[in-house]
Length: 414
Ligand code: ATP
Ligand code: MG
Image 1 (spheres, protein in one colour):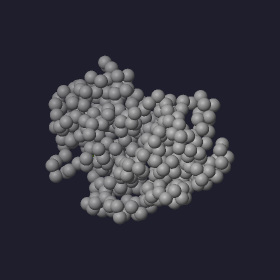
Image 2 (image 1 turned 90 degrees about the vertical axis):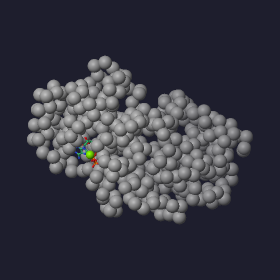
Image 3 (image 1 turned 120 degrees about the horizontal axis):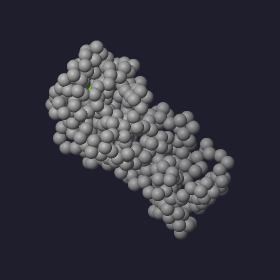
Image 4 (image 1 turned 45 degrees about the horizontal axis):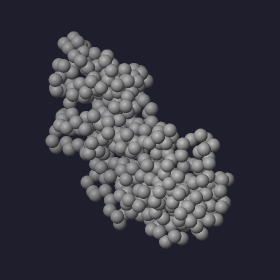
């Protein structure tokens, strides 16, 4: 699967760029700390995380996790910072990932004279002469070398001097606080069932856990669905703000009640309710980045208010992060904000539960909607959608055509 390049939109305007390449198997706090330090010290326009496709330096027995997982974890972690981006350039390029090829590609994409630097840890720097086309690489590229626990900084600095003399290259030693974290250690900890709390972002920890990465046993089967629901709830308790988590619990309660009343599959309703807002609190930058990466079309309305895309992103995240493959659940998450022309009962239940969950108060037609909820779900939703449209109009915000289409159909079904 090819990932849409997220860098296309800005590289031709990017005059200074720092690239942090790596296997990112998985991305960890050490990587994030390097990117932050480099950003604060060097002040480039952007920092680009570049997970490699096939690392040339890993041996056959060191099997690397599938690129889609490494890319996804890097996206979840890296895109919280407005100046950080993630590139699928190396992952999309067939064959081994050589830095020289990436340097050439980036030079071609950026404006003439753009300053492109590569960050490299003291461990990787030791071996740099073994890299493909090392002579050209060292002559033409700029490197920022950072210390790494277990590797003598003095030795790296001496190597910088030697290489500057021999190749006339550009090397910058950047003293950053040492973080004794490595992906190797994280993989070993996960394999041994040990905690990796604080070593990787929570998103990454959950992703690795749900996908059974770095463990030998099979990640999960349907019989463990109840157990998984508990785990996913705990994961959201940490990820979401307390207010959003409380709202989510309210939506589960309401969806449960409505699903029971309308004889729907309660498990499906509970999962859709649990995950409906899982992407709501992604930063604006992360929402934009993930829409590009996951090929979610950003139409005019979404472009004007990317927050609306949280339901589309939520469905994607439910699929990718929480391994939900049930299309009905995914659809209910996808359309819970806007509605849709042809809504299933489950879609309606989730949308209504979001409107009227017990924690909501003092909102437009809330009382009437609650009264109608068990009598005529279509009428209840019409009131909610109409009130939303009114609010948007008074805030001069565009209205998504899906909401208008939903309204039309619901009126016919009334
Ligand atoms: P592995 O243990 O699988 O080799 P890693 O932790 O070294 O993983 P990589 O993806 O190989 O992570 O590293 C990408 C880049 O980040 C390399 O240049 C590496 O030297 C640097 N790096 C990784 N972790 C640290 C750290 N804790 N401190 C400094 N540099 C680091
Ligand atoms: Mg490494």
